[in-house]
Amino acid sequence: MSHLNEEANRCLWTGKVNLTKEQLKSQFWRFDTDGDRRLSKQELNKAFNNLGLSFPAWRTWRALCHADENGDGYINEEEFNRLVVCCKMWLCHR
Image 1 (cartoon, rainbow, N blue to C red):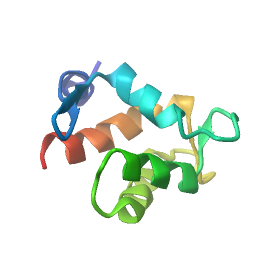
Image 2: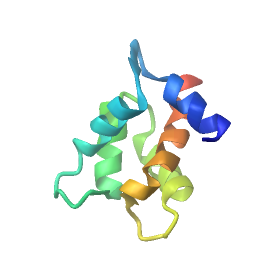
Image 3: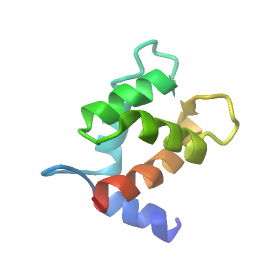
Image 4: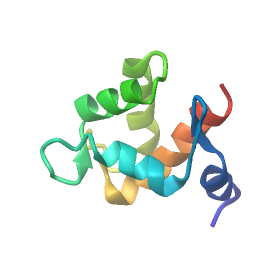
């Protein structure tokens, strides 16, 4: 496991609430409204908004640029760890 992934496992938080990687994953998958086990741009935007992050549309775009390895416009389960690393930067260093 890379250093960034280890750090992401330890230091995910939103506001006053610490989140583990699994808790963050659960928060994001709540917004998979069509149940396809992929997060669309709209679903990601709603998730970032729910996490209380400023500029959710920009964060959605950046998350897709960073985590969407196959370029299909969705974050799937295999790409989720890259999304966690991206979120770690925003949640732990704000």
